[in-house]
Length: 157
Image (cartoon, rainbow, N blue to C red; front, side, top):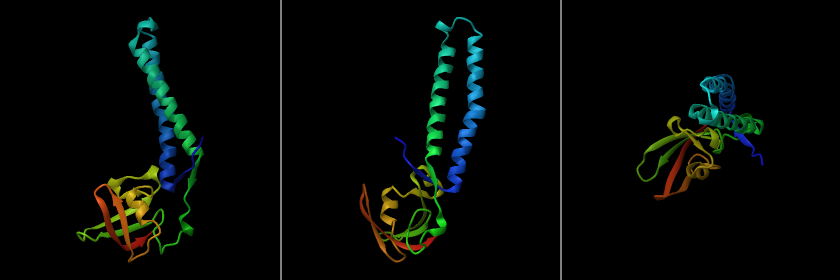
């Protein structure tokens, strides 16, 4: 069953580039390894050949999975998103009510989340808690450490 996934333009381009890299760089590399292992003689006792064939199978499965994901990918159109509320692609500045620490996150689709670059999934606890909130509102976010309160300071695109 195919699942539709949503991407930004950048995320969709990254997915396309990964598929291209696997097909044009990694696939020929593995084919070369198989050829070299085949040249070494008896295939029934050739561990290098078996390992290369297994790597080839894993690579082909990864390519097929990525192509399926790409076929079911939808581009997020941010031109019609309401800027007064937190939605996907919003960059939200929040303040932890308890310690006054301020953080800034961009809400993205789960497959593009990268906490190091400040991108969190809309499906994460914080993302879910912020969705639909307006500037000035307080979001109660259920975390393993208990409920945390975050005030929405600003919303940008």
